[in-house]
Structures are given as C-alpha cells and as structure tokens.
Length: 388
View 1 (cartoon, one colour):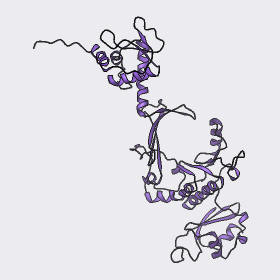
View 2 (cartoon, rainbow, N blue to C red):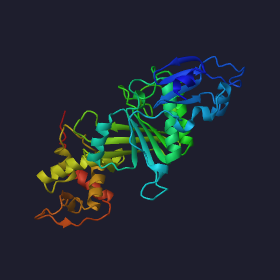
View 3 (cartoon, rainbow, N blue to C red):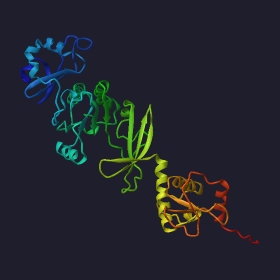
View 4 (spheres, rainbow, N blue to C red):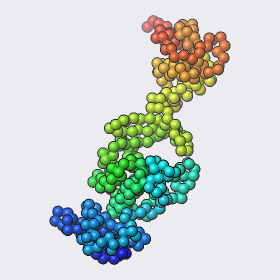
C-alpha cells in the first residue's frame, strides 16, 4: 500500500509532502471517541507509510478502525519510525567486534556530515559514535519532532546506546518561544522515553548573554533545569582574558554536585587543575616563580613588595606563606634561614646556589608561628616618634 492510499482512509488530513497529521479513527480515542485535534502522525519513507497515534492508541487499533490489516499495509516494506535525513549505519543488534555488551553513543548535531567526518579524523573519534547530522532541513514541526524522538527511542532500544546527545537542542526542537515553559516542556516530554529505556540524555544549550547565577546560565525557560536530573555549566575561568584556556566546570545535582577547573590544550583534551582555590593558587605561584627567578633568595616581604600591580591580585602574607610551604612540599622551591631576626627565611627555585645562605631540602614541616612573626617584623618599617 502506498502512503497516499493509506491517507485516503483517514479524515482531516493535513501537511505534506513527507509528514502528515490526521484524525485518529479509533472509536476508543479520547473521552468520547472523537479526535478533535488531529493526533495521528503519518510519514513516508521510500514511498511506504509509517504512523503513530500521539495519545497512545495502538497500531492494531488504528488499522482495525481504518478497515485494514497488516497484510494490506505490507509492514515489511513500511517505515515504522521516521529516519534521520543523514546518518551512518549503526552497528547491528548493538554488537561490534563480537562484544554484545559494549555501549555506544548516539549524537544528533546541527552540523553537516562533512564536518563531522573531518572532525572524526582530526580527533580520533571511533566507530562507537553514531552521528545523525542535520536531521531536519528546516525547523521541525511538532509532528516531525515527536516522530524523531520515537526514532531515537528505537535506536536506543535496538542498539543499546548508553548516551544520546542533542547538540544544540534549540536548533533541533520545534519550540519558537523558548521562554514559554509550557512549550518547552512539551518538547522535552518525548525525550523522557530514551531515559526510561536506559540511555543518558544530554541536552546541549547555549549560555544566555547575561550569563546567570548558579544553574541558570542556559538560555530560555528555567523549565529545562527543572526537568533534568543534572545541570552542567561550562564557563571561561577568566572571561576578560581570551588567551586563558582554563574553563570552570560546574555540576549541579541532587546527588553529587561539584565544581572543577580544567585546562584546554587547544585540541580534544582537557587537564584537571582542581577547584577554583587550586587555580587561584596556581596563578599566584606563577608570579612567585617569576619573581624568584629575578630575585633569588627573596623573603616573603620582598616578594610582596615586588609583586606586580597589574594581573594577579597580591596575596596576604599568611596566604603567600601557605603557598610557598605547599610548593616546598612538592619540591618546587627551596629555602634557607631559620626564620629569626638576622636569619630570615629566604626562598629559591630548585637548583639555585644560595651562596652564603644555607639551603634546606624540601620538607613538609610547617613554619613556627614565632618564625613567621619574626619574618614579618624583619621588614616592618621603623617609626620614629615626632614631637608635635
């Protein structure tokens, strides 16, 4: 049976040329058996029809109400779900290299197939990733979107994908007013089936121009944040510095929220730095290393006096001492002196010949509070009383 012959059995047919909506003919449809809002979706692939009732009527019920049978429809030649426009073939039965338990990712992207092929070669992306590039020629209709969600569900069920990525969601879904919570939730609801089938669903959105507070950086309605289980936000560590390749990864979740700073290598790799405190300490120590290379054997006070006015804010004495102690424990600096008047603590880069100063090996001991106080007193200005 052709698609047009199939449509001739339905009432109030709308749309085309490849996707239609029509009134569901089931007598059990709705509360009174009447489909006032066309709920039956019909699509065509290679001249054969596929169909689904959005309100849950089974296909057997739909065919029986139309006076048709599966033999009439020739299901073996019909399309059960609308396919993506451009995609490579997924692995059969979720198996590859003889491993039936291996998991794969399904990535739906707004970019072209040619770009993804080039990216796969540059970044070493293997065959574990199934890419659906540009699934819609133009903004999808609600019928096309719901049909596509069914297609994703079929892929997850048949090929056991563990991850489904939609990038970027606002360029794929049929939502026109992304600040309208009702419209947004309507678009998200069909994707819940993939999660229930066992796949994690990653929805990628762009950040709003005004950024936003915690867990609200995404553009559009806050209904998206309320719908998902985990929110991940990716920001520049220093937005004012385009050359700084560090990023802040913030994760908000009921389970294990956390925040981390990572360093991008310019390609496909990121290196974990730690939290923001670790990143800030790393910035300070870069300044310290530079100052010690110019002024070996400097005391804490001398380092602070030479601290550049622009760039990384100058720390307090206690903070700088903690930073140097941490660097000492890692062998990044050495020191000499006893931390008393006449023998202050002096700091060096590894391998520097301290000359007349006694250089100590790296160790984890903390500086006595008295020594710290003497270090501070050593550089304290001398105040001469004046008669007024």
